[in-house]
Image (tube, rainbow, N blue to C red; front, side, top):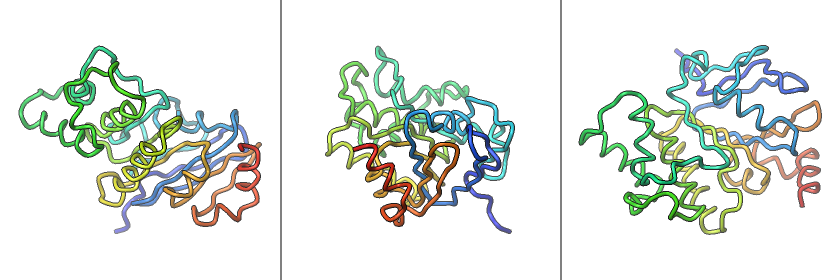
Amino acid sequence: MKTAPPLSVQGLSIGGEPLSFQVQPGEILAVLGDNGSGKSLLLAHLSGHLRVPPGSVQVAGRDLHLALAEVGVVFQYPGLIRNMTVFENIALPFLVHGLDLDGELQEKVRLRMRLVGCGHLENEEVHQLSEGDKRCVSLARALSGQTRLLIADEPVAALAPAKKALVEELLVSLVRTGVLTGIVVATQDLDFARRIATHILLLHGTDHTLVRGEDAAQNEHCQAFTTRNH
């Protein structure tokens, strides 16, 4: 029996031609587009913050709103609670689902911190962190609970090159090792998208282009997007 893809989108209206695409197991889809192209609107649909009609969004073969516990979201601005520690921020999704903070749960929180390289920050309050560290903590929080599909909005924007490389490596590793079944990441950085993505979805005007990551450099729409954003 064929396994349902981590994400399947059919006929989703984002202001132009209806969008239909799939993210297969182990894939990363990068969504690019100019301001006003519909990137944020698309991510709002995929993360469950907007209702879908017309169109449908399925996660592992189920309606998105029946599978929201399996969808983790990293926002462009981390949205962490400033006066709480890193550990407390990452534990929040577990607590929201009514789980007790026992020894087993504490180890799950620490595992996620180690996974994204912020284990040494466990007792630091969020307001003391650099922007790069806040991004990593936000990612660890998004991996809490039952997350299998990650939706990330501009996860490397304004990061220093070394921290950007770390986040890139982490995202690829999460799908390569099976921690996540798939990732959708919105970005304005085509070079970043080409380095991590198996496929790139470019929103432009009332149309869209879906290409393999390795083919983006030769695609005329991607070339035009790069010219506009440099």
